[in-house]
Amino acid sequence: MSELERLIQELCPNGVRYSSIGSIITRVREKGKDNPDISQVYVVSNTQGMVRAEDYRENTIHSEDTANYTVVRGNMVAYNPSRLNIGSIARLKYSEAGLVSPMYVVFSVDESQMRYEYFDYMIKSSYVVGKIDSLKEEGARFRFDFSRWNWISIPVPPLEVQDEVVRILNNFTKLTSELTAELTARRKQYEYYKLMNNPNGGDA
Image (cartoon, rainbow, N blue to C red; front, side, top):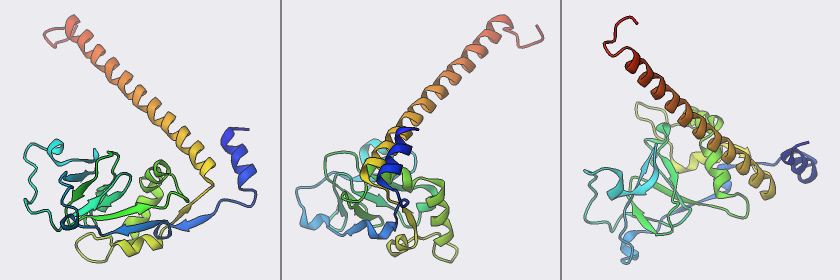
């Protein structure tokens, strides 16, 4: 029996509880105009997560007037309701509070119910991504407003179980990255070998 199976058997004898995502998150509407000491601007990338605007692209431009920007603090999540279908959602992993464009929706996760890392994995899971796509606002333009999180239910096991799930997935992600790097290196090695043995590109 694995550690995960043992924990589930011990802590969830009657099955894992399911809750709507909307019941474990709270929208944040704090604005830059009320926090003049916060100046760092962040952007959400579907490939890089939430990053400092100046580190995202050399030509990233944001308004000089950030009074109406929304404040985002450590471990809060921001997403673009019109680009959620391509993964424009991320958690702030920096300790420095910042601001995001008014186009983003910002929310916090109830730590008493869910680990941040577990939420990260759940929100990127194929199940949740599929539900987001099926529940988007009708019309030509994709849109997923905040109230629609109430329509998606996810497993919310005890925190100890969440920790073990995160540990397993982190190890899997690390192994996958290492394997990808190894395969890439082998491919380059093979191409170099072919070039050295057949520099003209013709038949050997």
